[in-house]
Length: 77
Image 1 (cartoon, helix red, strand yellow):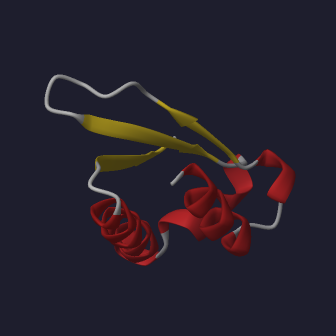
Image 2 (cartoon, rainbow, N blue to C red):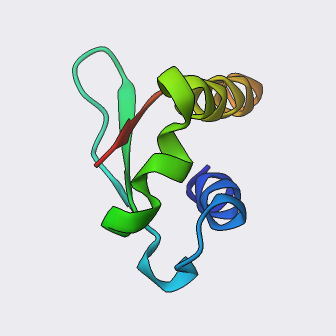
């Protein structure tokens, strides 16, 4: 899942070297939190107008997690 998020983000940003993903341990409910870090200049590209791209990223990630029976949440930092 981490590779999927990295691949999606690298396709959107200009500074691909600044893209990093950190993963938290599952909480009590079994939800794994993925933190996406990008360069400040690329933040608008990842979020999009009115958060549409961020919402699409989260939807794709949840669909992928559902295929491997995981519960995830994506936060863009």
